[in-house]
Image 1: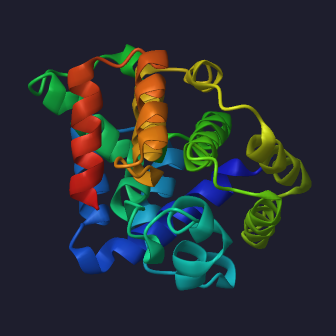
Image 2: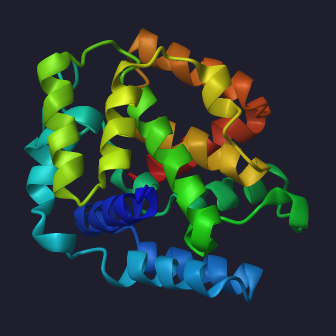
Length: 246
């Protein structure tokens, strides 16, 4: 599958969409790089591309159509029952998910130094590790967007068409269709996390597409936080970071 390609494009486009709101995605990622130092070359390139190319629509995809009124916008920001225009979608949280999740963890611990067991932010991963994390985050986005039960079969078809337009291969296409129909299972999603950092990112991207005022969606977040074994203080900090990133 080519999940990492799709996720990188979404992060870039979300960064461009949010640029007018004053969120410095590039600076945020550079700050993360300075904090951690070194890192895998593939992950560095991915992070740099996410910041430098955030305002560009990859592969000729129109960003407004994708994240505003298009099929993926329908998925994460403007489907039935939500405010129109993508206002429920927190673009900055998607654009800098790894850096924001790391920052939230540090804030919750008073700036304590990291350990190797925490795992790397998605922007710094390369190779198969990047592909696997991307798949986890795409799954989190899809499941969170379904938490209010408002995606019907015609909307599912539109969403898979938009994913295809981003360049999804056949295997990823079939996987997306499966996720759009699979039971909502927070425990199963949580088991995909391969590190504490992965768990934080899964929760953060879920917050990014959730309308906290919707009881069903709020309940999904609560289930997910429990399944991911996130301390209440950390879950709250992740939510604050998502909202502040906008």
